[in-house]
Amino acid sequence: MKIPAMGFGTFRLEGDVAYQSVLTALRAGYRHIDTAQIYGNEVEVGKAIADSGIARSEIFLTTKVWNDNLSQEKFVTSVKTSLNKLASDYVDLLLIHWPAPPKGTSLLDATQSLVKAKEQGLTRAIGVSNFTIAQLEAIKPALTDTPLLTNQVEVHPYLTNLKLRAYCQQHNITVTGYMPFAVGKVLKDPVVTSIAKAHNCTPAQAIIAWTQANHLITIPSSTKAKNIEANLAGLSIKLTSTQLAAIDQLNCNERIATPDFSPEWD
Ligand SMILES: NC(=O)c1ccc[n+]([C@@H]2O[C@H](COP(=O)([O-])OP(=O)(O)OC[C@H]3O[C@@H](n4cnc5c(N)ncnc54)[C@H](OP(=O)(O)O)[C@@H]3O)[C@@H](O)[C@H]2O)c1
Image (cartoon, rainbow, N blue to C red):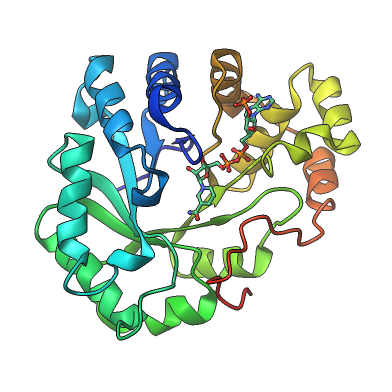
C-alpha cells in the first residue's frame, strides 16, 4: 500500500473554512486528506469528501487517535466515532497522534489497540506520529504481522530530522513530513526565495520539490485556492543537487510542534 506523495493538511482548519478548503483541494486534484480527532473537523472533512462527488475509493484518508483515547477501553470506540463523523466505513490510514498515552496505558497497549482497529476493518493501514526511534523499537512486539506504514513527524528545511528518517528508511517505514513550510516561516528564507526565483516557481513549490527529492510524503495546508492549486503543481518541479544541498544546509533543528507531552526527541 502506498501513500499519495502529497496530502492536504487540515490542522487549524475549522468549520466552513475546513469544508471549503478540503473541497477546493479535492477539486484541484488532491486525493489524500490528513485530519485528526483533535482537529475537530472530521465532520467537515467527511462532508467535503461526500460533496466532491469523487468516489471514496479514490481518496486516501488519514485520521489520528488523540491521547485521551489511547486506552484499551476507549481506542476502538473513538475510531468508530471518527468514522461516523467522516461518514465513511473506514479510513485508509489510522495513526496514534502522539506517543503520550494516559496513565495506565503503555505504548505497546496502544499499538495493540491500533492493530485491533485494523483487524476490525476500521482502517486499511496503521501508522504512528511523533514517535522517536526508541519508541518505534518499543512497539515492535505488537507489529509482528502488521507493519507500520508511516511515522508522521515534523520535517522542513529548518528541521530535517535526518537520524529518525534514516532509521525509518532502514525499517521500511515511510516518513510523512508535516509542517513542510514551518507554518510559512521557510517561505521567506532568502535561500529558498532565490532558488524559487531561479526556477520561476514559488517558494512553496521549491519546498515541495525538496520534499519529493527527499522521498517524503508531504501534507501542506492552505486556506487559499491559489496556494492549494500551486502547491500541488510543485510536485513536478525538479531542483538541482546543488539547490537541494543548499536547502538541506538550512537545518537548525528548529522544532515548532513541541507540546509538553512531547517525547525526548532524537
Ligand atoms: N501529526 C502531527 O502531530 C501534526 C502536527 C502539525 C501538523 N500536522 C499536519 O501537517 C499539516 C501541515 O502543517 P501546518 O498546517 O501546521 O503547516 P504548513 O503546511 O507548514 O504551513 C501552513 C501555512 O502555510 C501557508 N501556505 C500554504 N501554502 C502557501 C503558499 N503556496 N504560499 C504562501 N503561504 C502558503 C498557509 O497559509 P494560507 O492558508 O494563507 O495559504 C498556512 O499559514 C497540518 O495541516 C496537519 O495535517 C500534523
